Length: 251
Image (tube, rainbow, N blue to C red; front, top):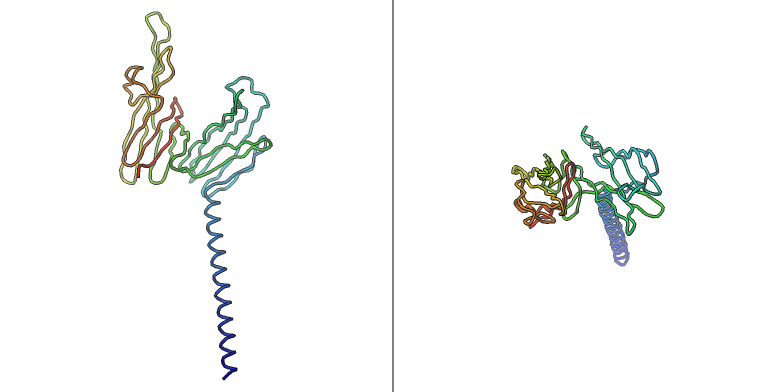
């Protein structure tokens, strides 16, 4: 009888060890899965001057074609660092430039540019330059170029049209210039078009206005808030071929 009790005790201990080992393995698998999910949200690609090797990230082929660095920009508006970049996905190629400007008072880095549901930007440190690729998300400021599309969740934003005009006063001097923009929004099976414009009058700063009629300079704003469904689209800046946006979701 005593021997039987000992055997049952040993079986219980062995079963407990197996259970502990199984649980440990499951925890490790869960931790690895979370780590992989975190890794897949973004990637940092170290760069060197000149041509860099292509990198595959998810469905993207990323080609840092040329990194140009000048120690002293020839003027305040010239980029200190410039990366020529190609990104290919499903036989569609997006070509662009990313810049870093070094101002006299503080460094200024261009906000990342959007392509589909990705953001591309530069990260600069004292001894290294890296290309950062991350998923586009609500609340992030980004640039979108003409004829490109940005995707955030179910929302798709396309920069479709841009036009400009300018006028002179009776004496032939510059009076004002106007720009007109159209963006298309889609969410599942619903879509809409939004139009707005900018006005730059002589003696005034460039201003954003809610529609292409533009109106008077006194009615202008520094930024626009466009709303559609549950989305808020903040237009933070716009020019002929590029605009700066931020998108939030109300609920």
